[in-house]
Image (cartoon, rainbow, N blue to C red):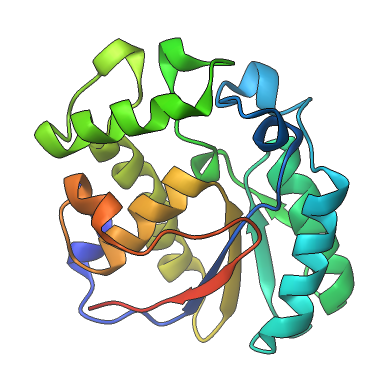
Length: 199
């Protein structure tokens, strides 16, 4: 379900940042279960540098930005760097709806398995292949978050700090496309910041 389909226009400006390189990325493994990702597998030193460099290049965000992050350690640490560099006036917020997509049986396995999951996504957006959270489930939770922000705020700039698949699916929702098409859009690199605009 795409909760954004209820809105012709959005009243806030939404920016997203994928977390910087994590220790899991460095090892080439999938870390998607909160039991592993909330306490462990934070940013690598390269990841910290990526976040700092991305914020310094960006120029779109300022101290009035509200930062909302996944509670996974790699996202939390990325958001903390952004919050400090921007000298944000509002406290950092966390929301579990920005968590990594749960990759089920692929947890702590090689990240080469992503391609296998994405092939299943194209065939069936409700697929629970090998206990992976479906793309439609992810779209429902990330767009519900946006709908909540539309109720809470107006004329705010928000930076959402999250993960590759969660943000890929969110930008697909902004593009008014089906969740199964998420790999057809340009993916976000680690620490990349991008403004999401509705189609």
